[in-house]
Image 1 (spheres, each protein chain N blue to C red):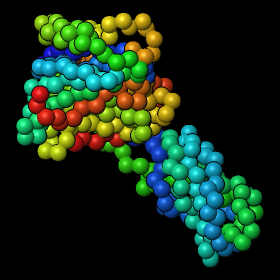
Image 2 (cartoon, each protein chain N blue to C red; image 1 turned 90 degrees about the vertical axis):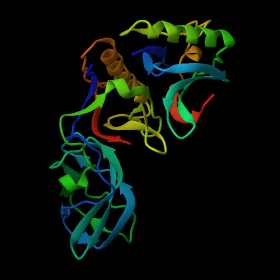
Image 3 (cartoon, each protein chain N blue to C red; image 1 turned 90 degrees about the horizontal axis):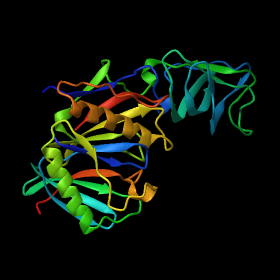
Length: 200
Length: 108
């Protein structure tokens, strides 16, 4: 027997990481030093959604810091902060769009390789996670302090679909266990991809 | 390898290994399965299945034990286990958020 669950990994679409982006913003027209702390929702030329940011202008440098990490962003995507989206008086000001390019270092850490392989014979159960939304694959191994598990981090998983995501992984496990030498690939719901799996 | 699948409020079913299960208990809206798989000292693997609203009965325990035995005799099978009285409504399904938990638990 060599049954595995294959979890496809998509390192392209990921959340951002909170904090200042690697690249400085460009454009902005005439600027006034200061900080905008009210989260601003930038637009993007990529597929990402949900990120918010703050803007600090110091000596002409435009620093964009991520507040909400969103999902679905890729290195090379451009975030655009509209002119006039400048909060209240006494803070930074700009009168033209600010653009900043997302660097690889600005994205959540991804898993290397095309698939995460999970030995099916060692799986005890697949559980949904209503807080992080990526399912948990419990195993029958013990770490010394807890039952070992695979924790999936999924782009596009949310409060509305985490049950479907858990079902998708459970189905792959079921298929793996119903046929000798079966190695099914998890078929995530549309719009959901997995970019990281941790074990322990 | 023995597995059973349980109706799930989040959609479809969730499949659970029942290899080495030696005892089944109930508590409120949960079913607890204890496995002869060592974990911490003096403890074993336990899986908790939590239903949306229905409380499993003693008859459900008997039925689950029978399903475990049956699954162990049919390699490659994955039968559906439903609570007795399951009328297809959501209350008889595993809770969407808290369906399954696995932990190291004291031997019973």
